[in-house]
Image 1 (tube, one colour):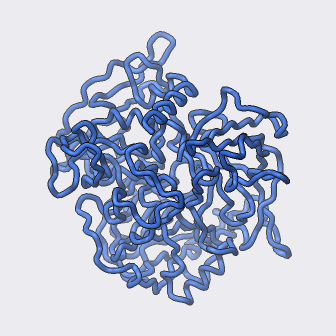
Image 2 (image 1 turned 120 degrees about the horizontal axis):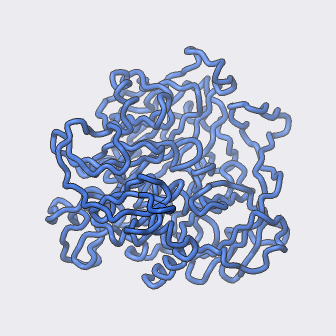
Image 3 (image 1 turned 60 degrees about the horizontal axis):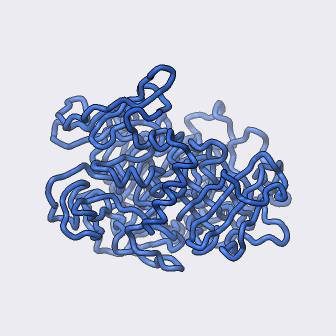
Length: 590
């Protein structure tokens, strides 16, 4: 497996040339792309400078040891490339870029997840902070409270994988290191049916080093209040949407509102409806997502159940006292009790992102769970939210879900071993985070998440081939790299022609198969009017997918080792125009 990864990395380097690789792993004299860009790597701060007619990385200067900075506080904004600092209470803070592009000071426990999911393209959405399984700083001693110490600290059992309070790590050559795909046990053919013991628990992912494992069952948590007024609900997007930088199926739904039938200029204060807690809990996070009308809220309901709300327009109700602070901070840790039915926000301008995480749930359709340790480690815990709600609320929400087939709430895990179906990551990169394996192998301190130096977006390395979230008869080809190797994510319908094998049946025995790509368009159900141009209203329940203009062709081949070879050509429209792989071939792993 290590040989395979080494070869894959070499292939990636050959595909991109040295410039892209060096941008992610800066070396003195290597080319860079943005003057004055600063990157912290291997205990040095490298700066992109102009040398003659070229932009190159300078020799780097030693990163200063964290010192107390009175102006730095958890969640406050910082300048990209800033060295780690300490708050007045002694907490070490790192300048971390979220998926929304904002940089804010965060402790180690908030570094791994980047931004969570959100609306629009680019990034795992518009998420700001979010806690997760990101890297810890380097340490000197083993922490006896956890299986392993901090990144770079000494360890004694080579090959041991375990939680260190901030991340799942591994002991390699006597040092605590990042875990790579080659380090974890091979996933069973039909996927894990429960959490593998090396993967962090949901409490660890969302709770950080002080997390305590719940002893009660999620079945004891009942949602007795709607999230939005039931009489204001409109058609809602289920789990699994792929759009723009959301290359892999999204792990949340989008709850529709009747106010979206109006234009933004027509909205009044009366159009903003209350966002309320479905059950008692504690609000643990209130993040600003890059604009005054976009926030992320996380509620811990206890018993391993969390609800997450994204792109929420206004912070109100029990959070009103934090509204100003939330607007000025990228990430704001909170501890606010909330009762079922109590208001904590207001919504009118866009659909509300909503999902439930259940720490006892495990989605079996991820062939490589390790890929999500670098970002969005909560994904395998994504749960169907409908069963949590009281029947009247459930029925009203279910009636508005655009998907009419089971499961109504949608699906995000489409990996089928030995086929082309599901999520993929460019060979040589370490899963969802989009950073090269070599960077993780050489890391002596956390790498952060949410952005990749030299790339337009961390999703540049993502690929998904999955059924459409509503019309599951249609296959979607979703790639973070369409034409630009720095990232230009887009989606198209993968047209399975008569006599062709579908992606979930495409195996190594099928050889190379070339599929036509077409523009994705919608058709409303019979008797339902089409949305007018420019309308923000969601498409009606039960719409279907139709294709329009040609988008090119893609050749796919499942390899004997389980990897996927791909070649995308947007300049031709006939599958007969691509008969064999060329130097433009790429390789992806789970």
